[in-house]
Every structure is written in structure tokens, then in C-alpha cells.
Length: 115
Image 1 (tube, rainbow, N blue to C red):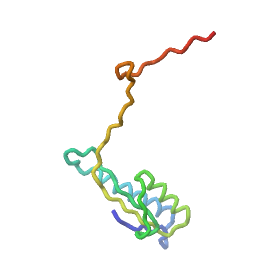
Image 2: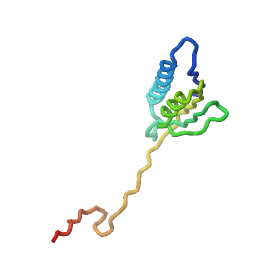
Image 3: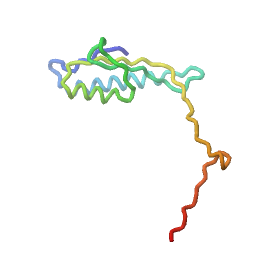
Image 4: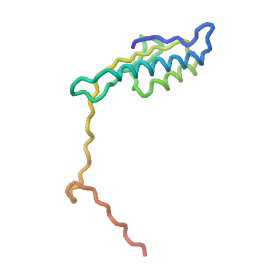
């Protein structure tokens, strides 16, 4: 989705337009996540860009899109540009710290008795 959303539409309440924009964004994301995953892919991820226009849009994290939309509306912007492009996502495993004294298993140490 590459789209410029208008927030000020004559004859429509700005808060209702903002809610409709958020609904459209969520609907697009849900639709894209329903597409069957190819072999070896764990989830659908998104490349996101946000800005006042397509020329000055910057890359942002997917989780920050709706707060950015709220901030743009609060600042009084007439419109904003949003680009959401779906991509394949693969999970990576975080390495666990190993405790070399106890064969890789974390142990609980008893506290010293109080005197």
C-alpha cells in the first residue's frame, strides 16, 4: 500500500476520518497476513515509510505506525503519506547464555543465612 491519506475532508468530522484511516490500515494488514506463507517463511513482515509526503517519508518500525498517525492528526496535519510493503519474515533464535559450571543449566543459589 502506497497512499496519501487526507485528514481534512469537507463535510466530514476529522475524528471520524481519522478512525476510518486507522481502520483501513488495520484491514490491509489483516488481509496481507491471511495470504498463505511460502515454504520456509515464518511470518509476514512489513517495510514501512511514513511522512508528510512521499518525497520526505522516512523508514519507521511497523509498531509505530498508528502512534505516528495519531501524532500527525494531533499536530493538525492535513494529510500524510504511508507506505506498507509486505515482505517475508524469518525468526531468528536468540543465543542463551551458558553456565559452564553446571552443564549449561542455570542453578539457583541459596542465600546466605542472616546472623
